[in-house]
Length: 328
Image 1 (cartoon, rainbow, N blue to C red):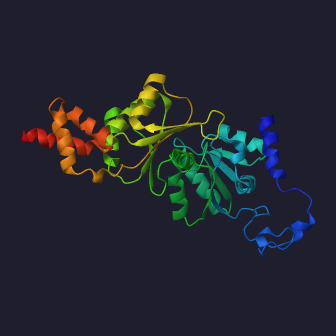
Image 2 (cartoon, rainbow, N blue to C red):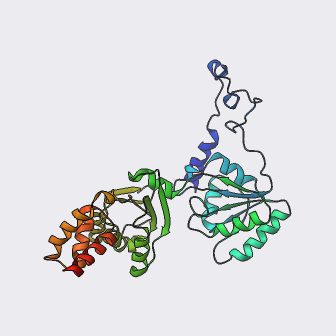
Image 3 (cartoon, rainbow, N blue to C red):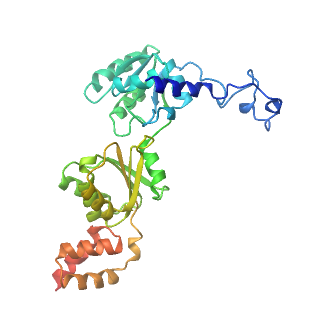
């Protein structure tokens, strides 16, 4: 951790320089950027955060690069009465990198009920408590929401300390539309359940974001391509780390790539673009394509071909193909 500590130390040295004459010029009458040490600082730009008031602080932590921690998060983690972590061993590495020594305890799905009672008792006694996950923003694919709900119901404050998020990092590097997106967590392990979930999301007019593991990636991509059509997509892995990679291709091409090369290592985020204006494909155009395809393919094969050709949900193509087959 020596290298991490040296890197961390640089964060605290930012801005620690002598004032030049031009530093003392009034910066557009904005007190938050005034160089004088006793100037008002309403936005917290130059002053450390005050000691945390009683309440639950939901603190985002880095998803890989330790320098992605925010200054405010460091203030909170160093000032609260206690910190609850998903895995104390992981969080201890972060705290050690910044020479922080708060009281540390665990909060995870296996001890959540007992830990919630301890946290509520601490808050009732006027303590300040921070909640962190192993990486990123707590409550995203972890059990923290039950704690937040209990804290709110007990009448205590909940304070967000924003920062890193694998979901948002993958989204903004994917090239997919970002004005509307749906985060759906991990895809189900089993094929049938996974395809059912994808079918439910097929008509959602938004970018879809999932977490996935390397060993299941190729199969999941194949199911996505079959159910959702050949939509543009991106597989982002090891974000902010040394071997960060984002691969962008249509779903069927991504599925073929990982089926041939094997699943990658590391944390993986899958980003899938919305339906490509499938409504623009009229029933007449779709029927003409399917009629030709059904002359030489099964209903399932014809529907898959239409879904890929028109970049539409396979569910729509299959329903039309089945109707045409029944009419014949």
